[in-house]
Image (tube, rainbow, N blue to C red; front, side):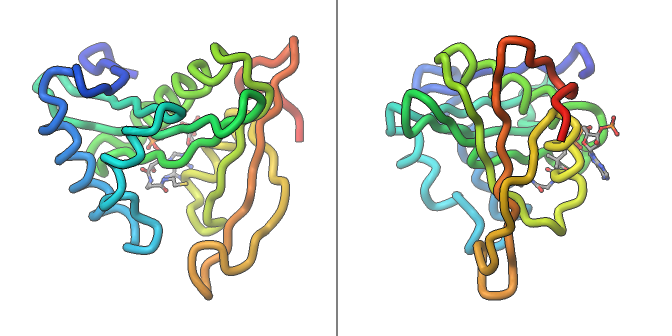
Length: 167
Ligand SMILES: CC(C)(COP(=O)(O)OP(=O)(O)OC[C@H]1O[C@@H](n2cnc3c(N)ncnc32)[C@H](O)[C@@H]1OP(=O)(O)O)[C@@H](O)C(=O)NCCC(=O)NCCS
């Protein structure tokens, strides 16, 4: 990741919080189809005390990428959203943010991180595999009647290192 980028954890105390959320909502609408979009629920999600939002900011404050995660139980967490603005893709930001979210989960002593991804999202699928996520199952009609999802998981063990988990 280039040094002029920084990853921050968003909270209502973050300077420019409202502006950053507006930009994330704009990205969400642009990148994801309506039924997959969290655009209308970001504020609600953030009010929950078991979810977190990290974002990657460029030097000029532009939001380059964001990742949302939640921990419904003390044992497992899920990555609920990950997106990188088109002009910033393929510079390592997606990977850096995903790893940062996983570190946050590990810090909570969580054993397993899960996520859902459309098998047609090749970039995302490759990224998750690279980090060590494994495919658990295919869920037909998960996003809509004609869009499926892989459920994927990453299990931590004492020897776990990024990208070295074997499928
Ligand atoms: C998926 C996404 C977050 C990747 O972000 P990124 O910053 O471009 O990815 P990185 O540069 O960190 O790449 C990390 C790895 O991801 C995979 N990857 C990323 N872009 C890829 C592409 N276009 N084609 C194939 N693999 C790709 C590669 O394994 C890459 O590792 P490598 O550089 O060693 O080959 C980004 O493409 C995106 O926002 N896509 C649209 C939204 C989306 O699909 N989100 C996931 C929903 S579940």
